Image (cartoon, rainbow, N blue to C red):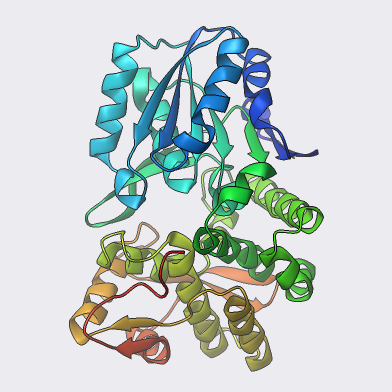
Length: 375
């Protein structure tokens, strides 16, 4: 088992990475908290696979868990879903010594974390991420929230988990499309922070696609280390932490205009990262060779790098980008790469240049469509 520390003073916690960890969740929670009542928030896809195992572990440790299951998919990351969770927590009579276990991918983690941050003005929660994307990115760092129709993550809070358990066994059941989507966040860490990691991904991509345990564990651990280093320096995103948003300005806008149903998050930010790399070449002088390496690696991971939009949808994309929470004084600002492993935040880009770059990444078409079918 690998352990990554997230040093945040009183809010410090660890990320544990390895096989067979679901069976330990009850013991882990008992070692941290003393309350009896708790809730597991999961979704309709994950709960049938792992819900019983987690619930039994909690019962064995002396807890009284309530299972809350929401529909799978980004649309559950909403205030309406949060309200339903609140109602079930109230019926189960959770109190301030109680806690929530987030069992699932990024949507479940963000929703459950938001519910934990706001119910009774805040109760503890534990992250048990079951997707690659959640294990390397969204489960750690404390950013929790829900979407509005206007845009992604516009309502939220900072609430650190008490523990993150990344059970590698859960990735065995992950559909290939969702696994590939997680690789988008993995590649991002190489671009923004660690050129050596990027080179490792170029070398080991085929092994990662086969989910070779030793290779996968090492890559997940390195991504968690990077996330921990960044969050430890800038917990509430006043500066450095913004580097984690590379590719997300365009990616989040694409998710919003396609109503959070056509693209998985990783697919949308794959398109966004390739566009951001091309924008980096124009503004910061990112070498064409490196832009090519970035685009090729996303292709090798089986991820989309272009999107099909008609003229109206392209206009909608710009409108959604202007609603992004990183916009300042009405200006769209980007995280851009000077070289692989080094990015700069707060980069302004003229609308004409953004349009030029997007024209290289956008094919005019009748509708937004999924880049490939669910497997």
